[in-house]
Length: 325
Image (cartoon, rainbow, N blue to C red; front, top):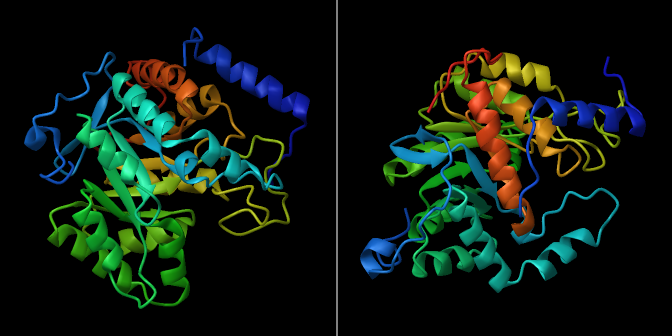
């Protein structure tokens, strides 16, 4: 049974994790018509490098940028105003600055939902940026695949079935739809993946031997004050407070999966410190981590990711899952 911790206990845990990974506090393939190569624009030159991995035939930074902060998906529990605050802060100019900062710090990919406003990514490409876009898709209202086609048309490098969507499809007993979506993505010569909060989605996909290029699975501990109580069961927290109900089960099963794994929600929507979450995710077997970052967090998070990856790939690493990608 999970032991709940006090605020004081959580602070101690966070400090311990920080001590384990010392870090000085720092400053904080698009369509041909938009690509820097086609337009003749000068690409953003990275000032820092980031360890890279391969998904399909694409090289991608091991630290990837999540798009929830741009779209206002805050997962802020009772604080209903936070999503609006995020959107007010992340103006078009601020988003452009954030994308450029990310590239300058070696981050080469961003993940967003295809149906949210993504014009800033295309603007970034026009300005010479090379950030790769991984698009989340769902079945459309008619049960069709128009969102996949939209992602292709708008220049996504990778496309994956959204976690909520995959869980809903399985709940309806229509698992074959996930396979059809993956096949359609692959037919369009895009990297294809499946995301999930519920481990059962990944289990079923692996059992069916779907031809995915990657899985995207939530992973975070319950070492935070608003984590779910023992009586709160299910793959997601009843109060928008948890996205990985049994992290050890995820770690154990993903150890058997021979596909690149992008771990997301590793900070439990901001409840866990990066210094605690980054080492946990990579040591537990994640090949890539997907993290939402404000502009003032990017340099520090990138520096931390490089430090953690250096330790996890070293001879004293406790990671047991092979690297895929």
